[in-house]
Image 1 (cartoon, chains in turn blue, red):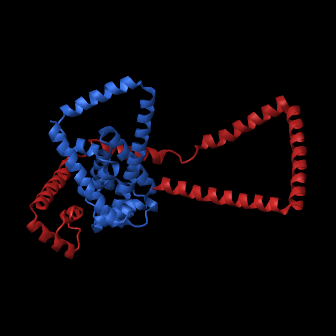
Image 2 (cartoon, chains in turn yellow, red; image 1 turned 30 degrees about the vertical axis):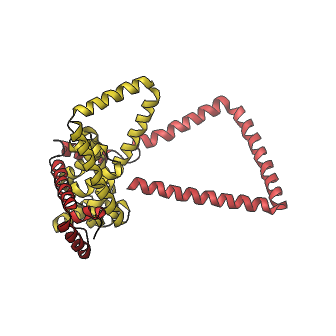
Length: 183
Length: 163
């Protein structure tokens, strides 16, 4: 991380709004991209990105050192995405419980038809993955974190990062192949 | 390396293997066509994923909306406005005065009964506690346990919200 960025982070920590604006400008795509990758919806991703920067602004004075800023910011977005996904799955469960069984069957048949008709893109294949797999692919291949950084961020051993990323890539490859076969 | 080292393939692509492991992997790939093909396929997929998401950019205007939201939060007083901080105790006081005016006699009776009850309860509890030490030792231990538990959970809640 360059010295200029560290200086900006230090100023933002002291409460400079101009410095914070530079940080928003510099990391907006980074934050949005991760949220979009995890959630798969542009509106919700923007909501999360906005909330992440608000939390970041409020908590910046408590950041221990500027070197860890990027992974710290990513952890904020990651927690927000996890909260949103938890909420979403609860809502889905609730909705499913009130719907009649035949309605669910019809909608799932329509969904299957829709999936068959669509070309399986990277995003669709990513949606087939578990949250852990999706997260690790985004952190490494999209956000560019190294294994050790991911291990610190997720509080897991480096060996787990290695094996999780490996199985995530194999799962993604399988999902993309399945998509090609269904075309 | 006779077996296919599937678990090393990603780390090999990402250059996260140590030199010895990397050398063994290079040797294996030189002999094993299926692993070589898998490495190539996964490497292409990794680049494809990176390129796909690289094209995704934050929507136009998001930056401005974020800075406006920060400004709005900054402008908003942290707890209550000056008027609010005065009006709330005033409303409370008015309600208290009104209550004591309308139900004054009943309130006095209720308070007297409650005080009498509490005095009796305190007398009984102290009597029981002094005669059976096991009771108050247990009660004290439970009270300390509950205080510690609530302290830890409060600390955890505060920590998770700051992250």
